[in-house]
Length: 189
Image (cartoon, rainbow, N blue to C red; front, side, top):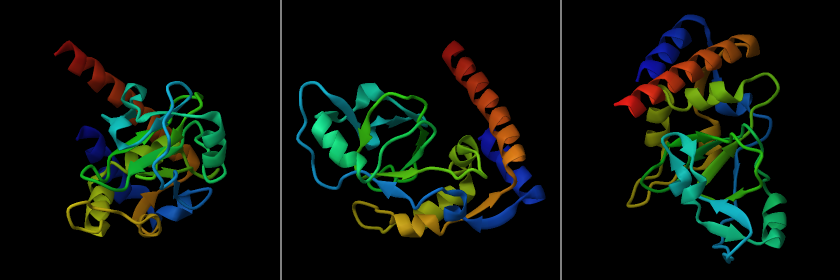
């Protein structure tokens, strides 16, 4: 909550509004839509259950996929360090995580994958997606029903606040430090 308040205050003071897609190097994408054949050993395959506490928890992977299937998935999207994921379908729409590993893995379609362009900071986007402003837009734009679903094209049109790369990087570093301090305090408790 503290992080969200800081981002909201800074956004009101210094930033310009634009669509989320303007921060990205490419359109938002996702993983395969068909259910994969899982194997006993291979490439970790993750979905929404791996997004825990705004981190990717690989112990909660869906299972493993073969190298051949991973190669097929990579034609559409190949995970990369600092990609940002947002849960786009199911009861946990809006949950966010960032890739903090170079490990080879792949994702399933309920995760929207975002890669920032050279003018923006990935951690800044990661924190921005957690703000009340964007979370409210995400919830409102998710198609209702028993299984909420957010279109990637609609997500791209969400209105964000941003600044320049230097300031985004400084803000992300501060928020990352605050996150780590909060995590340490939670562990102590």
